[in-house]
Picture 1 (cartoon, rainbow, N blue to C red):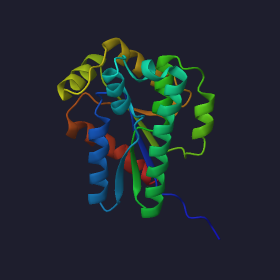
Picture 2 (picture 1 turned 45 degrees about the horizontal axis):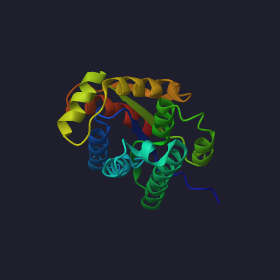
Picture 3 (picture 1 turned 135 degrees about the horizontal axis):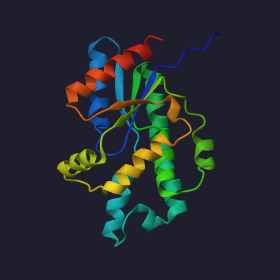
Length: 203
């Protein structure tokens, strides 16, 4: 019996403040309204949980609390479980998976922090499919920082945002990413994103 093809996977990437969560949610709604049922999935690495916990315990952040090696293991596990759940639900429902973050986000943040070559994490993530489309949103670091500050939940250092954006571009998979400038309004960015997605779905 011929195996049924998995539903498409669309992965949206970028540093904090580029608008990937807003775009991922909007994309899932727009695709569904257009007759292509899609679901939004967030695949974070647990930073919103680990960093506040670390600060409550008098530490700077998650890596400072757990130590680099343990933190990478915990973070990669958080993200891996989220991706596993997302893919399973997508397959069960037959809906397009719109991924807010994916494996590449783990690779990029590890590169940013200097966490080694990431071979173990890459080996663990090897079972995850290559998305049908990977979009890397880009904005000037100052704008990303402004957007993060406007949310009022986090603070991002300008140098870190710049280095993080470069870490994405330095990944071996980066040649397959579609870089999309995201400095415009939500509607403007969505108008640029949607044709990329429909083209990928029609391939």
